[in-house]
Image 1 (tube, rainbow, N blue to C red):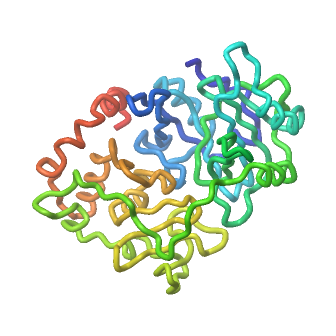
Image 2 (image 1 turned 45 degrees about the vertical axis):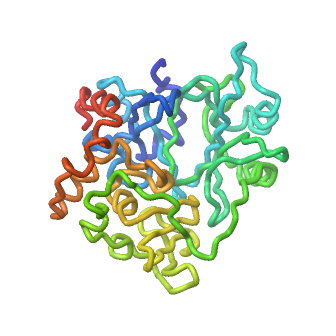
Length: 337
């Protein structure tokens, strides 16, 4: 893929020091690749929820060119008041745009910044505006149940290309009204409500002699990150998210009996080990789920041992360390990890 067109990136984005670089890692499960964020501070693990891994646009640009990273990414936060509407696979092979995407873009043409995506078949629309309080970003469906568009305004980094569409404006403008209209038109898929957040998965490969890594370390969710301003509800301890914050003060809960947690913004949950990885910036909250620590185990154990847990990973996880060896070696060759 060609590198970003840095001169095409609008000042409204480049002036905010919330940038990372990233590497596209292709695997059998992810043939288009997975965008791995990398810190511009030390070329360690990047994170869309850890400001200590972000830096200026100039720094990200320099590192991207120097180390030939796949690209640079802008981290969206509530404070910056910028949203991104992401339409994937809407640019056809002949260069035309699907009717659905064309209708969406028409509301922004000539009014705000619009660019082509990294894979050259999608579109990013940026503007000033926010999702409603407590509203999680993510994929949205049309009236027929087809996933059409994604909206984000925080907890996410967007791979910025600078490949501005001809009909786009060179900078960002306020588009809260247009955003609200699209949010009403395209709805989030409804999930069955449960009385208690649950963790549907377990990392069976982390067991040894009947004990999980959580058992061996004694990690406790409420000790790692208790809800901010916590109070007891039917969901357990509930309050604001300890790591990516909350506009409602009510988007995070911990089930003390099960030693599990749940984020209502991203509609994900997990156990103490996942929450520990989030607290260390190893994974993002929204990425928690089955297999979310694959390819991250060396970072997890390095963090645990730095905190004095003294866990020897060799007898515990022989398969995990080899599962994505190719991807890890490609990053290591760049001196990233």
